[in-house]
Image (cartoon, rainbow, N blue to C red; front, side):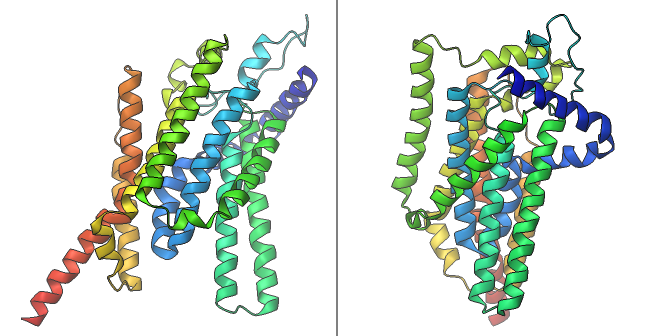
Amino acid sequence: MDLLHSWGVELAVHLQTKHGRYEGLFHLASTVADLHTTFFCLFPVWFHVRRDTAIRLIWVAVVGDWLNLVLKWVLAGERPYWWVHETQFYGAGKAPSLQQFPITCETGPGSPSGHAMGAAGVWYVMVTALLSIAAENRCPRVLYKLLQVGLWGLMVLVVLVVCMSRIFMAAHFPHQVVGGVITGLLAAEVVSKKNWIYSASMTRYLVITTFLTSFAVGFYVLLKALGVDLLWTLDKAQKWCVRPEWVHLDTTPFASLLRNMGSLFGLGLGLHPPLYNSTKKTNRGAIFKLGCIVISLFLLHLLDDWTFSSENHMTFYVLSFGKSAFALLIPTILVPWVLCRICKAEGDEKSL
């Protein structure tokens, strides 16, 4: 593995020295590829454009990231920014110098890459949804083929830039991003074939959320009982990150787990209360949907600014769960219900 890791470090050094002018692009790619973008930006748009695609986005993102967590614990992959300081591969020679950035110092194991996995899965869902819409609208065959090539080509380009950004940031080795892309596509394909996710009851949402959380925690406890320290990466991040403030608790595996489970639980709550049924029956025009999207994105932006202290880990995890759940309630039920009430009130006034 040391040889494979050394090749990865050489590629990271090459990208940093020869393509440093693209730092802004790589930083943007890593930021956008985070599943936070899916929950806070993509989901509200898709929910009011094509509801089944929005639901599939959440399921693919949550299940994929949960799988990523389990694989990280099993594979226990290194990260370039600490490996280069601890390896004996270079012997008495000087180890390569890697730059670090504010998003470099993630605290979980490195394999597979969660950003690459999430980007591949999310874009797979969106591309297949757009092609499905084109087919349903009887798009001419030639135009459909061009659209097909264009969308899949765009997806490849985006995922490639995301993978390069993770290597450039010294957060992942090349084999980790490749593994992430493959795993993300497989997870998206499998989840997309499960038709029951579109009609799952609140009970099923609750059961699956509980199962995924319990499995991850149980797996952690089991490995810890066997003498495996699953928080070894946090110590390495704190030791080798050039700036302590770049090490964030929200990049730890448990923080990611609680955010994802909160999102899944929030989706279940948003799809099943009586308020949802009343708004679902409302005739929604393009203006209504656009209003829901714009207001939801604005409110989610405000919610995203709400941060909390990480001094107490348990409180931090509970608040992360609650914030993620509430984030999905905003576009699914709260904003549509309020707009429905406003529209109904205006309609009553006009009829008087």
